[in-house]
Each structure stands twice: as structure tokens, then as C-alpha cells.
Image (cartoon, rainbow, N blue to C red):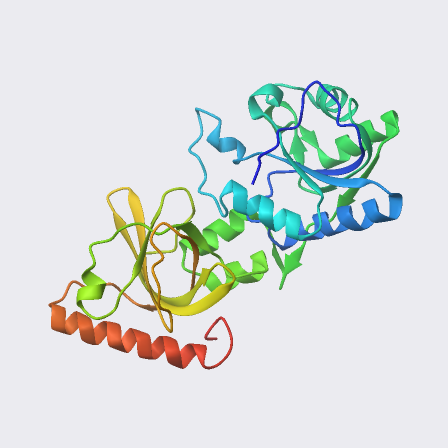
Length: 305
């Protein structure tokens, strides 16, 4: 997939409706904003476009630790496009980081044929995040561009945000995280070579190295693995080796070689803690893990309770 950067200072020669934001995770709150964008653009005869960054702002700032991602950049784009958005552009963070709100509007928005903007109520922009959603709306009114503000979305009283979802995943609250995302949380990557220990024990596995995404706590989980467009029940082992997170999964009812193939591993719930035990004991533990996965998945729902 081609990554397109918003061309500055050149103009996109199309009449646009846009939304602006980081959109990490493309969670339910983001989805409400994007659905409003797509719907209004269809009514107004505009092309729908999302302006975003490849990574959250903390990744570009030396005085901040990078927050772990919910989705890699390309997977974020795919989820945005699935909602009906026609164009996704990446903004160059370093070119706009020191712009004050009015200059941002003048230099980024006005040169384009933007007729409609929709943002969430927590939207911030400009140097040091000084600009608010209401300020963007006021600037838009002065310049003749309609700005629509979508209220924060809540699930059972909890405000949906990327920060909250990261916290839930780190705490192992995968069901709650999935409820706020609107889909089961996936760990995404290409299958790497492993030590083949699982195969020797009679349970072949795939291995992923997770570098940038937020990861659930160390342990053994039940879940699913998405291979292309098919999903398979799986027993999933998550562990940390020095500074790297390793994910190992045994797929049920799957045959084939997935080495170097892109997969999505979706841990749905905790089964047990990891244990260092003799091989025969480990084989019995894995066998019981698989039986538990089968038992849970037979119920036909993602989460056990």
C-alpha cells in the first residue's frame, strides 16, 4: 500500500471533507467521527479524506517516551479505509509541530479545497497542543469552512480513548479493550523462525516478535489467529525476552507454512501463568491448554465471560 503525504504547500485538486487526528487503534470513538465524515461527504458531493500521522506525536519528541502503538501505520490506514474513507494522508509532524492554531489553518487547510471538517471533542492542534476543537470551529467560521465536533463516545460509562485501551491491554483486560476498540485486539507481524521446540513436543507453533505494539502481560492465552481472511482458534504464549516481546501460537485445524507471512494474533483471554517445567510436564500443560481453547471456542463467542 502506498503511503501518501499531504502535499505542502501544493493543493489537492479535489473538493474535500476532512477529519484530522492520530486515530491510533481506530477505536469506536474514531469510528463515530469517520462515519460522520463519510456520511456528510456523500451528502455534500465531497471526497472524504483523513489527515493523520504515521505514529503518535510522542514518537517524534525527544523529551517523551514513545507510547506503544495499538496498530501499525499500514493497518491503521486499512481500518480507516474500510470505513469508507477515500483518501488517507500522512502529515509531516516536523513541518507543523511549531505552528500556532491560526497558522495551521491558514497553511494546511486553506490551500486545499476543504469545505467540511469533522473532529472529536478532544481534538488538539498547534504548537504544544494549544488549539482546541472549539478554537478550530471558530477559525473555520471566520474562514467559511464548517467544522463539526463529535462528542466523546462512551461504552458502559467509560470514555473511549487510545490511552484507556492501552491501559486495559497492559492490565490484561482484553475483553474490555475489545469492547472499546470495537474488535478483538490484534498483535500484528510477520512470522519469524523460532527454536522449533513446539514442533518437537508435537505442537508446531508460529512466532512473532512484537516491537512497537502494546502487549498484554506475560502468560498463556486462548485466542484466534488471522491468516489472510481465515481465522483459527489458537493457544497463545506471550513472553518477554530482554526488551523484546515474543508471541508464540499453536493454531488448531491449520496445516501449512506461515514463515515470513503476515498474521494477526488475537489473545482473547488468560489461561494460566507461564511455567518452566520438564518436557513431559510441559506437553501435558500444552495439551490441557488446547483442550481449554476448544472448550471455550465451542461456545461461539470471543470472550469466556
